[in-house]
Image 1 (tube, rainbow, N blue to C red):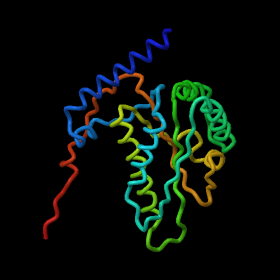
Image 2 (image 1 turned 90 degrees about the horizontal axis):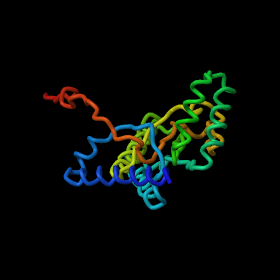
Image 3 (image 1 turned 90 degrees about the vertical axis):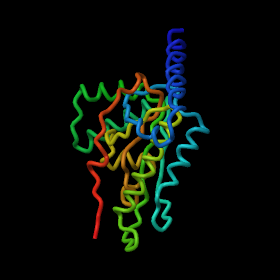
Length: 211
């Protein structure tokens, strides 16, 4: 029963937040996005997830390589995937302390959805160097995050969980000879409201060229 009331409470927070969002333009809404690591159920439903991924494949894509790839890990399989990622990281020679392992397991125990992120490398492509392929993948991930935000969810892009091992990407179907794995998105309902973040003045980072 307590869990039910928590779900209702967090649903209320989302509705309240979306009500406040309706007075903002889409461009203004995008400036309210921030990463939130601590999320819980409910996560996106099938239709919402499809919309997020549809936004992803609208990213800039030189030569229409269509290189983006996504792998879904959902509850209750996230616990088993956590085991795999921790073991693979240790086998790769990277240290995971007992405290880090506990923190990772606690975090992922409430995450309803992980999206593994990769792109298919177009080797020796003189027209589209790999940096452009990487940028396209980054743009796709940002589109997912923005779409999730506009739906009232929060997301967190993690490059932990064995991202830089061979074993974890390959467990998700990404042979590291042909795919570049770039981490995971954790998506769900924020456990606590987001705190305001002080952003830099964009114009202070901008110059105008004149001949």
